[in-house]
Amino acid sequence: MSTARQRSTSALVARRAVNVSVSTRSIESMFEAGVLAVVDPHADESTLVARIAELEAVKSAASAGQARAAAALDALRRSNEAGAGVPAAQRGRGVASEIALARRDSPARGGRHLGFAKALVHEMPHTLAALEAGRLSEWRATLIVRESACLDVDDRRALDAEMCADGSKLDGMGDARVAAAARAIAYRLNARAVVDRAAKAESERTVTIRPAPDTMTWLTALLPVAQGVSVYAALKRAADTTFDDRTRGQVMADALVERVTGRPAEVAQPIAVNLVISDETLLGYDDTAALVDGYGPIPAAVARHLVSDAVVDDRSRATLRRLYRHPSSGALVAMESRARCFPKGLATFIGLRDQRCRTPYCDAPIRHHDHAQPHHRGGATTWENGLGMCERCNYAKEAAGWRVTATMDETGRHTAEFTTPAGMHYQSGAPPPPGPLDVFVSEVEARITVALAEFHAA
Ligand SMILES: [Zn+2]
Image (cartoon, rainbow, N blue to C red; front, top):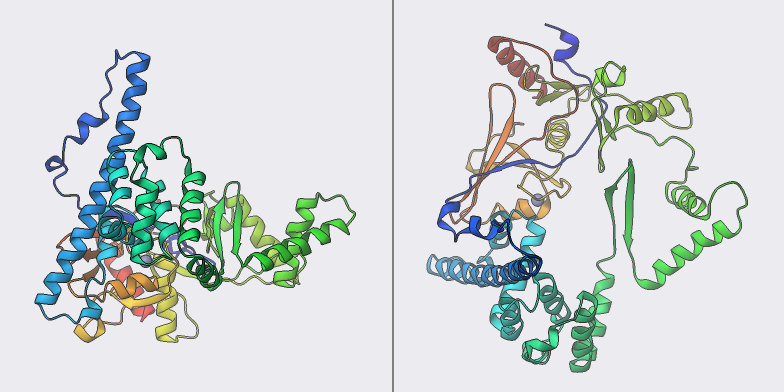
């Protein structure tokens, strides 16, 4: 067996979507979903167009049904919890996450779905009816709810009636017109509330990052309008006063990088804690994609380029840290930790293994390294019982009725099972790290490796 391969080396950190398997219950008990997907192969053009329209109406009606079910689940849970003596402030916690899991959506969207459902069912009957009748899509109904969110209940009811009581008025209105009409009504009903909401929106300023095609990335800033305009104007000024062979867009992008990082755009970025690459890929023996923290996979050649740039440029800095993979499953099982600072080293390792929040579909960056089985219920501080979670999901799983168990099989593969208060089970596996897997080992060897890795990680 090759020791080099057994202890696959990597520079640091990565993230990727969590592998998810959901125990789906009784699809057959739902209405004839299969019938909806069938299209008559001999249908003529007008029949096909009518079919498309009909199915669109079914999607809207399904959204209305989901909204009613979500609002009913929330009410039922709260009344059950009231009966069980749960304090009022704690009732209904985690319902949004359950709705998200059921819809195969992120917990953040689950929160939006629930807010949408409660507003429609309890306060906006005309919008709900228009959705059910197929006059609004789920997204357009969401826009109306969003624009009415700053109003009190009476005004929201008034907006609901004015906007949707006569559903025929919605015909022909696109997303922008629906949002603008709702906003205009909200402003007329209560201008003060709309202005106050603008002030509150400022508190939501933020910067986010997401992958773009071709190894590029979108860096997005949500800013108050005056700041956003002045940042853009400053970059434009840089382009206006620079005369070289770069385009205006290139000059603006380079100026942004320089002013934010304090480093000229052409200097290689320090890549410590940025890149996970297998030793084989780094040395050019194979072309498995590497992973960049906060971005995702990048081609092997690009990764090697990043590393060699950082190594040869003394204005930059490259460091290497060894990660250990299980020889047969390829699961990350340990990390070299010179400092041996146990909790921090363990947290770093869990972050490397999980890459993103382990709740199925969540995808949020990891903020907490927490116990699957809580410490106060005897859960151990180990990498088997440890989970990378975002803040929201970590609090959600503390709510009554939630249970999370983490297990590792004999090949080091780590699985977390989430049980919700309604008794549903959802599993998420740690994503596979980069690098090829072509080593044969016996089961005994595998067990010894895992045991060694546990020893080293602790
Ligand atoms: Zn999460």
